[in-house]
Image (tube, helix red, strand yellow):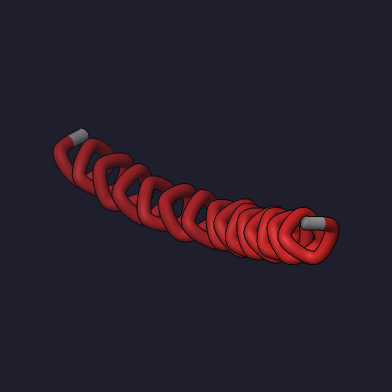
Length: 56
């Protein structure tokens, strides 16, 4: 019976570690996605400002 609880506790810990690793990966990825979105917005902003300056 003690062996059952030991294996169950081990599998719970494995799932916890897996969730932690996946969460860390998603957080790290979100930083790069945010930077990419900001860079694209900056590019669009530059294009819009260039068009406005050309019409004046």
